[in-house]
Structures are given as structure tokens and as C-alpha cells.
Image 1 (cartoon, rainbow over the protein chains, first blue to last red):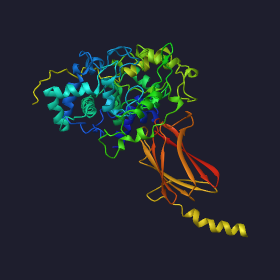
Image 2 (cartoon, one colour):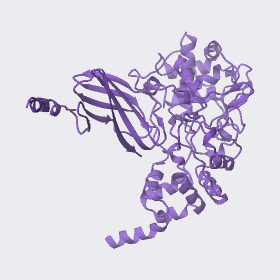
Image 3 (cartoon, chains in turn red, blue):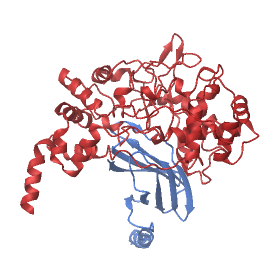
Image 4 (cartoon, rainbow over the protein chains, first blue to last red):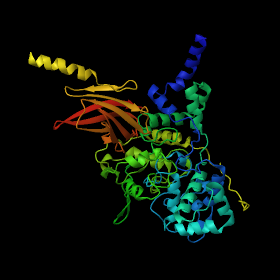
Length: 384
Length: 123
């Protein structure tokens, strides 16, 4: 038995030895995938099939825009990894930020590039009311649901009744939209197969992962320390950093990022400290209650997940970088002097060789599932 | 002799500093003892609280943490609740990166401020 164990370890040693013990623990921490579903206590519709069904219809509902032509899917296209391929999103008008993918969105602590919302349902209300995105008002959203027999029937199935107060009804719409988006989870990837093989000591599984990706992972979890911020199964710490991407929008206008995001969060009637949180104990509001506003938050943006990264170009909060190679080059040559970080010392130029750059890109490409997991539906109007 | 007597009298008070509920980290100076434990255990990216006992009870206490190598603190400001008898609970802490963090405890007593630091490594 001992001889068999020694032979097994000898067989996997050459591949596994490429990583230190600490790196192997760090790699194991990027899984397992997919994570188990945990309902959102702040949303009583979370995980309920009738809410998911209502939310899916609302997500593709064009009447939820001021011109009757746009819906959430205007920018979050299922065929494009729930983003749009644009540098900066185009709703009723062009906005300043890149459309983030909705895959795995339920795993976030903060929502939006600036974290101005603390729940997926509050974040789902924001573009509805933004004059440059869908341009609706609470009254218009409420009027649509009340007037449409199918929507109002489905709303009642989820929440018991259609509220007389517009804002209350709007929150229900946000919670149904969130219930649908919680179902959007990216699939298993070549990296997940490798990670599981490494954990199990499966030599064949370890060997099947491309050598270039292994070298790139070595940079990611070793010299590059990329996993200091891109950690865990979703490859994000869910927090905010200045990564040296200019935040000037145009002459005289800047995007303050997290600094304004915290102030918007505190002012929002939909935050988790407010009356629409369904979690009576407010255990979900710990982050909102304690979040700290500091000068260094200026120009910070949320660390994005790296899952399905290859399917979500262009990159960064303003879509400034077109390709994964551009992103790696950015971190390879970043100047710490240009960071607006009040003495924070996290980022240093990776100074990668051409081969190191290609290896890191090869690793990042193995974090994608290939896409195509969602099929659009024709919705029957049969709720009475 | 009078100095020796004071030390003997103080000794039982120092020994009495306790934090019921399990093992705790202990920090000590000539004037104060701090016992603390994280609840739940510290995990990167998850909120946790600290249970504390400070002996003798100070006039004021502040709790925070930072990453010395990265030169940044937490993105959250802990709230502190005094439970009486030198016991406290600090809530809302979150370490958003793996690596070496340092808890900082600042005590105010008798017009003086005393600072304690204790390093922990999280993965």
C-alpha cells in the first residue's frame, strides 16, 4: 500500500512540483466550481421558480424603457457572455463605463464598478431609473405591471399582491430581476478540471492541462501575485482598487469610482439598511453599516471576476483595453507613481517577457467555459 | 518593602483577566492585559467580529487592522460595543486580501494612550 502511494506521488511529482505548496493551496482555493446556491436573505423572491420566471420576462421586456425599444438585454446580451462587446455601454445615451458581465453576479458583495449598491435587487433598479440607460420612473414601471394582465398575475404569484405604492412595486420588480440573474452561472472550465485533479492528486488530469497555461498560472499565483486581488472561486476579492487606468472621462470630467459609490450607497433608499431589506435581522447589512469612506477611494473600481474573461472584451471599467494581451501588458508595465493610492503598495510592474505574457494570457483563457449556455425563449402570456 | 507589597496585591487582579468561551490571544503590558478571539474565525473576504476582554477596564478602546507590507487598512470601520466588566465586541471587520495583517488596539486610561499590535497571517 505504501509502495503504491510512493509510486503515485512519484508519478504526479513532475507536474505538481512546478508549484510550491503555498501556490498549490492558493490554486485549490479557486474552487470548487460551481459553488452551491445560497438564497439572498435580503430578497424573499430569491431562488423561487415563479420569481425567476417573472424576472426572466422582465429582463427581456422592452416596455421597461422610455422609448419602448430597450431592455436589460440591450447591454447584457446572453450571446455575448451577458455583456455587449462595447467599450462603454449604450442605453438611451452613451455612458462612461463598460458593461460588466452578469455571469456569477450573485457572488458579489458590491454591485456596479463603484459598488454603489449592496444587493443585486437594488443594482437591478438602478439602470431602470437612469435617464441615460432605460430612462423609466417608478410610476412608469408600476403602471406597466398593473396594466399588463400577465405581468401583474405573475407579480401576485411571487409577492402575494401588486402594491399600491409605486416604489414598493418597483422594488418587487428589482427582486424578480435579481432572482433571474442569480441563475446565471458560468460553467466548468479547463482550469477547474486541472484544479480538481491537483487536489485529488490525479496525475492524468494534471498532465492534461496545457503547459503554457501551467506556466501562466505559475505567474498568476507566484511572481505576479495576481491572486492577492483575484482570489477564490470567482477570482475576485469583491473590493476596489486603483489599477492605473485613467479615470478622466473628458476635459474637466472625472469618474470618481468608489469614492462617489460609497456616497451613493449611503444615500440610496434601496440599501440594505433601508426598509426594503427582507432580512429582518439585517445580518446582510454588515458591510453597508461599516464601509469606510476614504480619500484613497477616489479612482478605485471593483475587482472583476476573471471567469469567462476571454468572452468579455473589452476590459477595465471604461473598456480602455481591447484584448487580454493588452491587459497583461498593462500590468507588466504599470507605473506605481501614477497610481492614486495614498501610499498603498500593492501593484508593481510584472516586467514579463514575451513568453511570460503569452503564458499568462494562455492561463486566463482557460478560465472560460466557451459560452452558449443560455437559450432565449418565447414567453407564453398564460398567467391569469 | 512597600513596592513589593503593591506588586503582590496587583498580581491576583492580572490573573483574573478572562475571556470565557475558548482559547484567546493574549497581549500584555505593564498596565493592561488584552485577550481577544475572532468569531467566526478569520477568512479572507468574509466579515468577522472580535470578542475582547481588557483588564483593567480602560476609559476607551479602539480596534482596527492594517496590512503593513501593503500600507493599507481595512475597507471597513469596525464598530465597538462595551459589554461591561472590561468585555467588548468589535463587529464589521473584513480582511480583503491574503497575507500578513496586524490588529491594532488603542487603549485610553488615566489620560494616557497605550497601543498594542498583533500580527496574523491569513490565506
